[in-house]
Length: 102
Image (cartoon, rainbow, N blue to C red):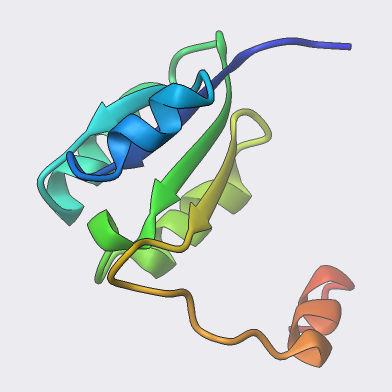
């Protein structure tokens, strides 16, 4: 099993919660800074997972999803924030996309 670091890109208020569980945290002020940090982290071979809070990704969600699908490592995912929640997913659309039809 391959090991690696888990990073969370989030705001200053939420970062202590992720540090408590042992994650590496990148505190950012907004979407542009979040994208800059994410671009740096995907170049680091020691990083296995990057979670990006919706609170710091507002307006960049689609760009993050595209970046996530273009790299095999690290795994990049958007996570709910305290202020911003992800949109509801339609399971049928997710399945069709996974099968290459969406």
